[in-house]
Image 1 (spheres, one colour):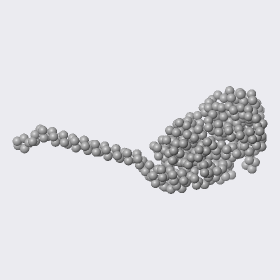
Image 2 (cartoon, rainbow, N blue to C red; image 1 turned 90 degrees about the horizontal axis):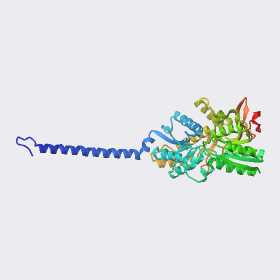
Image 3 (cartoon, one colour; image 1 turned 180 degrees about the horizontal axis):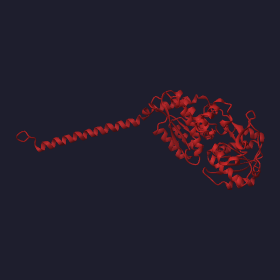
Image 4 (cartoon, rainbow, N blue to C red; image 1 turned 120 degrees about the vertical axis):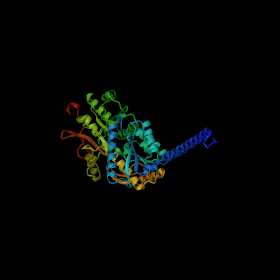
Amino acid sequence: MKRRGGEPSILQGEYEIHTAKEVIMNGKKIFCCLLFLFCVSLISFGYNVNAASTIDIGFTGPFTGPVAFNGGEMRKGAMLAVDEINAKGGLFGMKVNVVFGDDESQPQKGVAAVKKLISRDKVLVVGGGYHSSVAIATSEVCEREKTPNVIAVAVSPTIMAKGYSYIFRTAPDAFQMTDGLFAWLAVRKPKTVAFLMENSDYGRDSEKIWLAEAKKLGASDLAHLYFQIGDADFTTQISKLKSLKPEVTFSIGSTTEEALITKQSKELNYVTQWVGAGGHMTEEFFKMVGLDSLYIIAGSNEPTLAMKDPVTAAFVKAYTAKYDGARAGVFSSQGYDNMVVVLDAIKRAGKPSGDLQKDRDAIRGALTKTSLNASQGLIQFDKTGQITKARSMAVQVQKVQGKAQLVVIYPTELAAGIYQPPVPWSER
C-alpha cells in the first residue's frame, strides 16, 4: 500500500524490513548448516588431511609414575630411530610424527591411551608397551580395532598366546630372555632357591618359568614372596629370606624397586646369589646402588656387551652421541628396534592411501614378512607375532677398575670373565 504522492506506507516499510530479516536469518541458517557439514567432513576424513602431511605413529609406555625412567629409556631409543629417518626426508616425503600415550604403569590408563591413539589421533600403528599387565589389556583393544600393535619390552608369554592377528613383539619373551641364564644355572646346579617377585603378570609369569627350571635342576623351592609396583619397604620379605638362606634368590621388578631391595639387603646383611632381569640392568639402577650391585646375575641382551655386531655397535654409538654420553641399555635398544621395525613395515606397505583401515591392514601384512638386523640381532616373526630368536647371555655385575660393570659369564664363547660367588657385605 502506498500513500498519495507515491511514498511507501509505514506498513509496507515494516514488511520489507521483516522480509529482509528473514532473508538474513535464512542465510545464516544455511551458512551454519554448511559449516556444520564441513566440520563433519573434516572429522570423517581427518585421516586424509593428516596423511597428506605426516606419518602418524602411536607409542605407549610408563612416561610418568614409578617406572618413568625405564619408560623414558624406551622412548629415547624410539626417538633416535625416528630422528634418523626424518633426517633422511622421512617416509614418502612426509615427516614421521610420534604421538605418545602415557599408561602410568596402569592397565586401565593404558587402554584409555590406546583408544585415543586409535580413534582420535588415527595413528597407523601402535608401538611401545613396557608392562606385561598393561600390554595384555591394550593388545585386546588393538586387535578389536584391527590396528597393528608392535610391543617393545613386555615379556609375558600370555600376550602372544592369545593368537591375535594384529599383535607383534620385537622383544624376547620370558623364555627367550632367559636362555643364557638357564644354561648357566644348569652348570651351577643350585640346591635351594627362593622367589621375591613383582606381583604382576610380568613377575608371576617369570616366576612360573624360573620355578620350572629350578625343578629340572632338582633345587628345593623355599619361598614365594611378592611386592607391588611402587612399594618402598621390603624388610619383611628380606628378613624371611634371610632366615631361610636360599642359595639363589630370583627377583623380578623394575629399577626403583630392585634398587631398594638391594640397599635393604645390605642393611639387613642378607647374602644370596641374586638372579634378576631388566630392572637390574639399567643405567639408573647402577647410579642408585653403585658397588652394592656387585655379584647380581641376570639374563640379558645388553647392547654394550655385543659390540662385535656392527649394527649393535652403530646403535650404541648413535645413542651415546645423541644423548650426551648416556649409556645405551636394554630398554633403549628395545625401543629403538621397536621403532625401526615399525618404520620398515610402513615403508614396505607403501604410501598411505587415506583409507585408514586399508593402510593398517597393509602394515600388518608387511609386519608378518619382517626380516632385518637390529641392535638386538635378526628380527623375524613367527606365526604368533613373536620374534623367532633372541640374543641371550648370562651377565654378572663385577668390579672392573673400581666400578660396577656387567661382565658376560655365559655362554663361554662370549664370556669376558668367570663367575664370582657373592662374598659377605663386610668384605666388599
